Image (cartoon, rainbow, N blue to C red; front, side, top):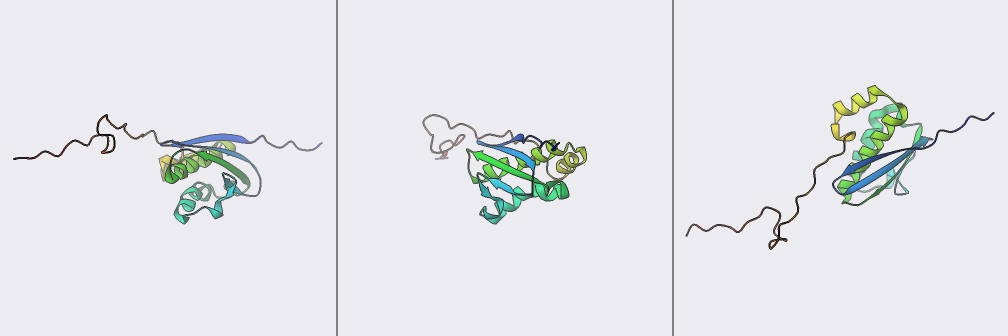
Amino acid sequence: MAERKKKPLISVGKRKKAIARAAIREGKGIIRINSVPLELIEPRYKQMRIKEAVILAGESGKNVDISVTVEGGGIWGQADATRTAIANALVDYHKDQNLKKLYIDYDRSLLISDSRRTEPHKPSRSSAGARRTKQQSKR
């Protein structure tokens, strides 16, 4: 009887307005973001930031395929959401508490989504910023 493959496990990462969903399954270590291989992601710093989770995982990150869909936000919000989704997927897939501790010791934002949001702009000065007031003159 053939061995049944594991169902893909899905995890989520968020940063600002960006939401990333990572599906992880057994494979050869291929990582795709919105159907684009990770090696083709530019700028290179963004690529390295996303790879951090896989590099820290070591061997357990090399025998899985990860497919990420990310939407909303800007390019850096999407990058951070993607790395959070990948790290959570690896921890959930391998059920490894040592890996979870390693991620938290290295950078807490690898596992915990950043809850900070931008403050809404106030009426009548919407282009200036949320807290900007008129410059005060002494005379």
